[in-house]
Length: 445
Image (cartoon, rainbow, N blue to C red; front, side):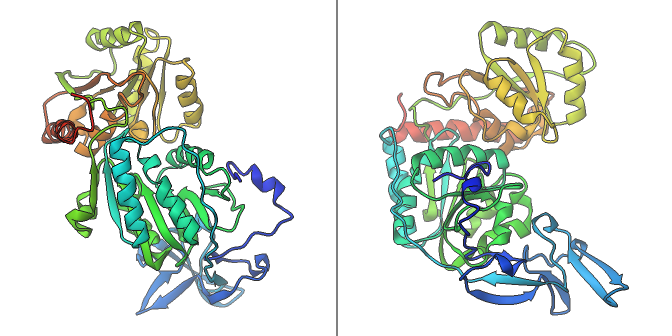
């Protein structure tokens, strides 16, 4: 059963859902669920304020004011206010978790590769033993399919399962693939603006939505674990653990694992997957010196872009600065009719990306908003001012190219004003992954 974009919920209004493992503000929503704890949303502990929804203790996250009506000081948390206001006055209700098994059956239309089978077995073993692992997989390895057998086992055992990502676009993309495969499962897809439709035994959501759950999930799979904002937000990282049961399994998936995460687990807990599912090499970046002058047409860049169009290729051109990107767009738009631009706050972002997929645009100027979760055939990337990007961003950007079996190669061009250590490390990582994949015979020579 599906619950994408809230459509299925229209048919479930008469059927009350259960709020197992949830933190809720309105107890009239409950039917026969057991309330585990009643408290105010913000409490004072060891002489400092703490939010019970996002668990922040940072003083900057709390706002204080005096209520003339209640004649009390009101303290509320601003860090998670979009998910419901937590303060030191109103009660909140923490609902006891419950496990309900399902068949967990799935449909996969193709056979896993040797590498995918290796990873699937390792993930299944970890889930059975409630152990945590890092799935260090190159972009385009097909890691989503590697977790299917583990999800099947977990749901059949009765485990509550969450698949989460920091980014909404990744959540939407992965939810469509998993809902198609697990078509008989009741899956909640949760992100800002989407409501829970089922009983929360199997969810796909942004990491922020885990603030709502407490000690509920037996298995949490975190995709793009190093992506913004999860990588630099301590309260989001803690949300994963507060949403987990004492005995749990965490599977961290990424092509660029952060050092901090690697240090939390043993080397034996890292499952390295250096090959793409189509058994072709990862495209290796080329370096080219180029000093960008966004206010004037530079024929070196114009020639490259027009050549891309002539070769019937789609091209993402990455910039490290929004204003610089917009200026460059204004400079080149009269020369290139099939050009657009996109950034995180662009209200037309999703429409522009769909138009690119549908062939309306051939070239899109972009910030790092498209460094992850974007896949299409015949795609190349160019990075302007690549000396300003870090290693992980450059690896992710390079990973957009050659992901489709019908077009497994392509151009990765780093334009720079001076080669940096991050650029060299990014290229070295990609070369080393190709060597490891060859050694394991997981790609063709």
